[in-house]
Length: 157
Image (tube, rainbow, N blue to C red; front, side, top):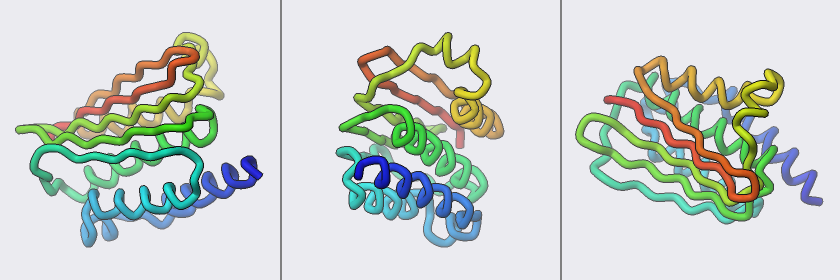
């Protein structure tokens, strides 16, 4: 059933997250680790997943790449759990002095004010923002009920 697929996807993401360490990122790099994660998610057939990279990839400190990976993972986990999306777009844009990461879905969206007021429902969003701040990054969340959600992260190199 769909519920079983979603439950398995969440468990798998959690297992990968626990097993992920800076050494894996150091050895394989953010892009390769993301490619493997995207392949795995596509095989689950939960939603259409479009992935793109622009600019010249910059290898960053493995801790920074790990944080970026975990932010993306948290966003995907939130989409699986809450969005009921049929389509997701993940893009990485390597600019002159920073990386922009965008994760957009066509799911049900949410009211930011309601989520912000509910401590139980905003832990994942807060985690993403706190992780980005570790490296002087910025997180912007745009969501509209019925129109989906876009999470935009900018982290300097």
